[in-house]
Length: 377
Image (cartoon, rainbow, N blue to C red; front, top):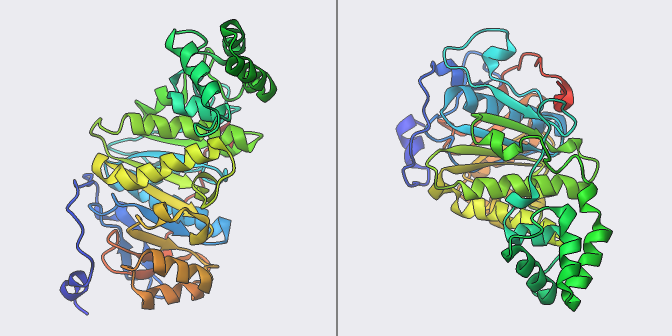
């Protein structure tokens, strides 16, 4: 099949701003065609800015594929990068030239943040969160906790209790039944004691992301799930608040099964999932593009999965996974998807507009990263 006929068989998508960066073609080389080392596979720089699903039940293989894709986008496009790493396996992401000890004509430093880092800890500010996110952290549901929410908004509208340490006393001063119930809840939740979450004198992660071209946030370093989700919520709110700034950002959700699962049980889980769904639905209008990494398609909310145009599948994809993926992404070729069941180590199925043709690719080796695990200084 010729390139022209292959391209004509693809679904036509609206033209997007080009994400090209003036680097040589090898900067976009993802690997080579499986079984044919002399046939390179390159990403299309003007089609990386699409939502991408990366799946596979082997966490090491999936992390390798996500790292390869992200590093190619970092060095070969002008996209900014924000990585929410729920698995703690992407801390070695660096521009490939930096990994090899070389120099780059256009350096783009990758900022690695971890909760225990001495000089650049991963923190957010409670006062920077929108009201709906602060309410979610307090476990409030607008449908059932209207009196508590009313007391909360009343206190904040007066400019009081913008920090967690002063919230319970301010609610008790208000004195209403809803305020007193909420004050008891604040005390029980012990949110002020999350010292590795809240920025006191340290800069917040949102300050760093406003200036850094690339940031890898190791959320796996937090001791509890609620703390990881809280920081993720703060970062997602920051990205949505800045969505009209004009830049293009690749947002990598590594461990998306924790951030946008089909089912949720708590207000903060629903808040995080809703932000991801909003990014999936509206991101293409604002230059916000998702890389959704999860073990299986069924682990991701259908509203997010169905918006993905590109797919990068790694070994241990099952027949059930391919059926789910084919139903959610009917534009992907079914005959190619069936090949994903027979992938070998180091291989991945790349399908969608971000490659010149749908292909099984042997991913290029990544040099050993010099960044220490967990982002410690």
